[in-house]
Image 1 (tube, one colour):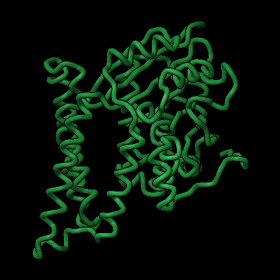
Image 2 (cartoon, helix red, strand yellow; image 1 turned 180 degrees about the vertical axis):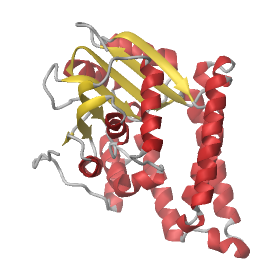
Image 3 (cartoon, helix red, strand yellow; image 1 turned 120 degrees about the vertical axis):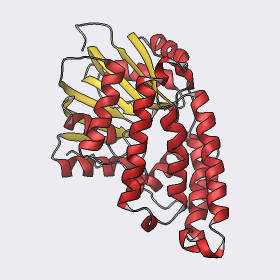
Length: 325
């Protein structure tokens, strides 16, 4: 694990003045929001580094890319968060060594800590996706999960990805919200939050209500989330953007329709009630339901529902040059 001493330190407790300033400065908002979330992000999104999430990450990669000779020698995760995508891909045999970057010092810190605990060969930098701090032709693979929609200039970031890729190298980004999918997911989340927080005001359900200070903090985070989520994507437009950046063999794939209609209300409900109410049995039941609906999406709905109606988009492309993977 490599840490760069010149990188800024995390700031997990933004002041009210900083939050106000962030409402007018999207990159400051990115840093404050993700520093605030870093230490609890894995728990919030049920992220793990075991077989469950290894299979999920590898499944997204395989769905986006198809058959490919593996492993890649060196991979970079852009907007790494806690390292979810790259660390699980490395464990799944996709890459041997890795680097992580994020605008949030808190996220880079947690990602490197996770890599160390897993015994993975990873270095990390606090960095802007529009100016990646690595030399040309450095990586065989650049990947990311739920990152492109946070970047102000997506095409510039994709050009940077191509710059740091070796000729024939590939980028793969998953977990990006489609325009239609984001609309219904947000509406479902808003309705679920309102109903849950109102119903739990009833005296006989008070044990299911988080302390008001926690609810207020979640609402404050949600206000910043509205600032940090900059884009939604139409799959065809995303393909055009990647091609315009200079990539070849570009392909967008989408997933999660029934799974998203189920998953977003469930995630919102879980954020609104005390942690101790969410038993292991409950969590396993929700996970199995999500898996079943994902299978329905993959085997049936993919052939019926237009791809732009699915919630998540994936995009892959290759840097022109040598034989690709």
